[in-house]
Image (cartoon, rainbow, N blue to C red; front, side):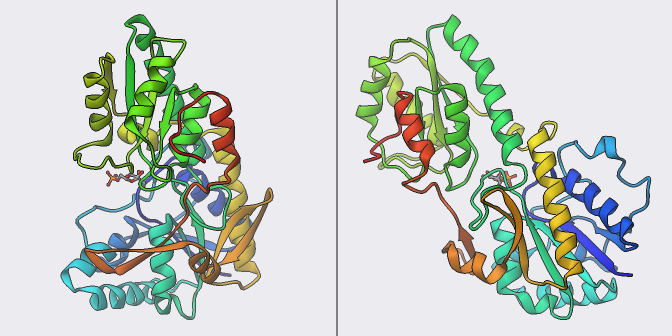
Length: 359
Ligand code: F6P
């Protein structure tokens, strides 16, 4: 009999509940117990730690497709790694996490998180010593190294695509452009994928330099007088501040291009989990449970060449682009970006989409 703990950390996304439900079913079939830690590390730091033991009624199959996390992801301002690092409370935070894990008498922890949470788990791995730590990657940003897929990304692309499909209709009626800002942090995958799906006129992502005058020329040469300019939230424009979509919109207005801005914001993180994300969640949950069965630890489930397998957290950390936030030097994250040889870049260019200076 094993006792597993599961928690969701960082920003929520669709697919989290599907993983949790599949973990519960798989654990039960093995005769194991599943403990749900509420509110991520925030709940783990509480005294006593906030946790529930699953049974058949806890998360029914029909609720597993719903967005958000049934276990919650915590409050931004609560005691978490970021707030602890800022206030110099890091040692106390780490001690508290360790104490709670021992108090809950867990054999293994399944951490469903993004690149921040996974990096932190690796950098502070002594917290989990003596337990098995298995991570499952989730994020709408798709910025996690060593995996071709992350839970929540497909649903986010679908949500953004549906949002833009609707905008396109009003854009057409009024002969105008919509500068639409996507999420994704410093990674352009979400914008790039949705941009191809909707046939955007331009996709601006942080990985590719662009020139506003070339963008304007491209729009003016378009066979249509309406469309969508998809702008990733991580882009910047020298000499300008404010929200990226506002900056681009002002430039278009100055060039005589009638336009509006649109912000889908957190609607990208919700929406009924797509079939593809549900299948991914089922595969990753199964892979995580097999890893626990095989006594693996400090690993992450990953999709590579269509196969679902585990990769070590050490490799995940070493193969990414490790960045440090100047305000929180203790926080190191291993990031992935759109690579210059991503085949979607050529596809977008061949569709006549402006991407910036790709050559
Ligand atoms: O990392 C996921 C993400 O949705 C980013 O794309 C976005 O920048 C950020 O989280 C938004 O965070 P918050 O929910 O704190 O506004």
